[in-house]
Amino acid sequence: MLLIVLGLVGLGKSIARSFREPQFRAVLLLYGALLFIGTAFYVRTEGWSVLDALYFCVATLATVGYGDFAPRTSVGKVFTIVYILIGAGVFVVLAAELAVGVIRFRDLRAGSDTEREATASRSASQVRDEGSSTTKQS
Image (cartoon, rainbow, N blue to C red; front, side):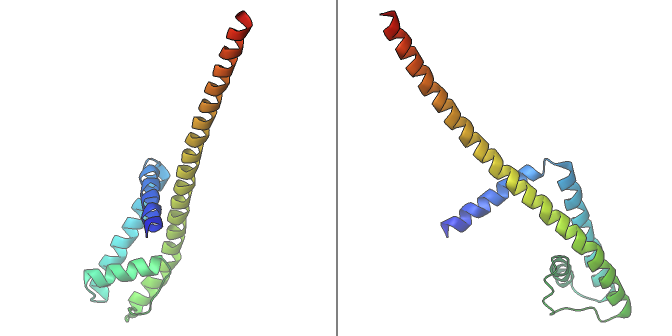
């Protein structure tokens, strides 16, 4: 359980760092726009509730497709085809941007650990050098 919490905390930090990147914000905005457009379409065309339509859009864009909802109208089916073709690509790019953020966060953490080790190593060698120069002066 603790590992799951720590993993989620790390993911949250990675996402927060990713918000600094303009391409991540652009893809996230595009994904949000697709969710909004799809939800509005299914509410209006298929007569679904907002929650059902949003649920269907998220499941569809994430390529999960539980099958508990499906468009019944011809217009809804055509829209869904186009929606999947566009939305799946956007979802993949968003997932890739999140993965890049996680890798950057991991590298930053590893880099700071390496810097601390290097600083400690330099400090230890400086102490040795100072000690040996003091001994030579005596």
